[in-house]
Image (cartoon, rainbow, N blue to C red):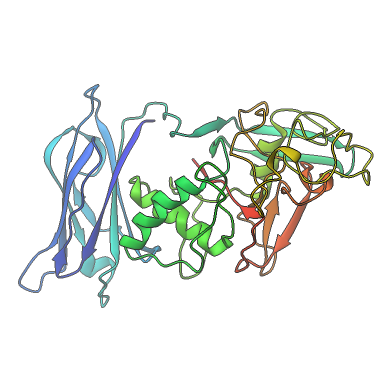
Length: 356
């Protein structure tokens, strides 16, 4: 299911057009004159195989869904690739009495083929991982297939999307820090991370997952988001069942960046304290993303380096998983989870994103 998407900002009464995706391109959105509430959304669609396309359009206002039931034209199944395609949205019927300069339209073309794995991500096969964890007992995790960043989001990746986001109207409580461009970004709150995920989605022409007014997540959208706790743990286990860590039941500094001590029998590292290789240059003592061996799914640093924000919402807090460079071996266990204030930002907290 190869998908190609493009988004355009619409101001009712005017239009803004942005550079497009190589397959869905030249998107133009314009409200008709004379007091009409009809909006013409025009686009070009190309497909190298000449497949008929299934075309959809999604509308949002500052991340909140906008009704788009009254649409006609080159939309739905069986659309031929070509130029000058047109979708007509009846805003008067769907969104009467509203006026906004922040409406965004996402046009999606689907040719029904198996989707390519997004760059920098790995496909996590859906299924069930069940077993008995040495410390947490019996567990069972069932997930659908999804894609996950192979590494924690680096400072370089954060900066590229952050700059785009700020230029397109986003604001963040924290600018993010990183010891180097290839180290994980840290000192970012949960709120910062979900805004960044929405911006990354829009930048790449995907449908954003988060409503930035309510912070609710639309799991059916194809944009980027934080993993659920179940998705994170399923991915961290890497296909192994009933093990303490992504690779087995003991841990050393040869496998992860964490604070080693004799407090835990399963911490058998010959070196103690912070990882000696990265104990330079002052706090934080993070390591480059992907410095240690990957797990069975091709994911790096699922144990140690920085804690990773998850999407789940127990009360007003959010989950973090994976442990960090300043924390003991217990935090690096696959089954370990903690909950933090989503507005907090710590030099030990980062994240990685997932998508459909």
